[in-house]
Amino acid sequence: MTSDALVDRRTLMNAAAVAMLWSAGSAAHAQGAPGALPAPAGGRSPAAPPPGFAAKRFVSPNGTLSYTEGPDNGQTLLFLPGMGVPRQSYHPAAALLSDHFHVVLLDQRGQGESDWAADGRYRVVDYGADLVAFIAGPLRGRKVIVSGHSLGGLVALWLASRHPELTAGLNAEDNPFLMSERGYWEGHWVKPLFEAQEARLRAFQASGRDPAVLGRHFADERAVMPRQDVPYLQRVRALGKQLSILTRRGVLPADAAEQARLDAAYARWLAGEPLRNRNMLPAGVLAAAPAMSATMDPLVPHFAVTAELNDGFPHRAAMAAVRAPTLYWNSDQDLVGVLSQREHDENVAVIGAHARVRHVVADGVGHLIHAEQPEFYARELAGFFAGACISPR
Image 1 (cartoon, one colour):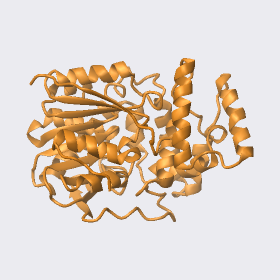
Image 2 (spheres, rainbow, N blue to C red):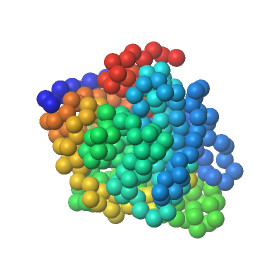
Image 3 (cartoon, one colour):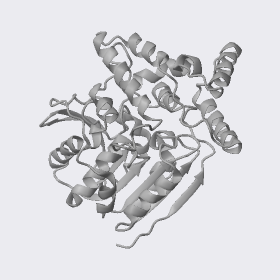
């Protein structure tokens, strides 16, 4: 099939849920987004599913998986969240899409409300085996449009490349294709985030799952910011976007004293001093961020840290094997940028050599595109895969 690669560059002035830092983005979602999962001990309950949806369980060969299923209104659209991201983060987008699709949201092994893996393995091929069993079970072997965010996107790519007979389409949302493989991964600025997350979760388990331990560890972790040596105009542009988003999310400094503390810390960071999250993040972010991954098996980030995650799954070969129509997303490079725009463009070219692909560059939106801009996300997805029009609700 010939390539039909398109680039859709949007200026999204009202982005609603990214934060100034990678960590703050997760915190903002944990603090305010529908369905954010709390720490297991003493937190609030996950948000109820949208109308017409039901939370369910599937006993897989390697543990029980939790999922949410909507009405059977068309082609099955299966969402796989990223690492530490609850399936409930899809609720707003799922409600918009359910008139056109049979929407299913799945917590993968080791996180959310699903069991930790009985075999203790968290490679893409292991997640993939769960996925094949899930499709054969509750989905009765139906072809799916498989949609994956971040880690979930690696699993979605695995299915599309290894099981074309099960794949009607691929929706790839801001995925770490190539970046998380051995070699490239060593020295990448994102890796310390996963190392810190693993240590935090191990301490949490050792404490008997004391939520206060999560908070203390997160506050003491070294602050990791994506880029420091960017051109002046790019920094100004990024700060403008971040300020708008932080204001709308409500995670700006609480008062003048906190603002002064953060100003001083930022100046020290620009001068090259390594700082901790407690120095760099507003109090609201520090309070909310750790809950995002409270239910996760520490081995999930461990397999990412060691790059065992991708054993037996070469990304470039997988992208070249995709034949299903593909909607490829990348977030705003000013806000996240785990891959460069050139790398995203190259990935699209590899997929587009044998499949129809549309490339959406989500300007003004961070890593959690589906949660930050659900109407934009649903509109693009429905238009590409079903030719459907999504109206705001």
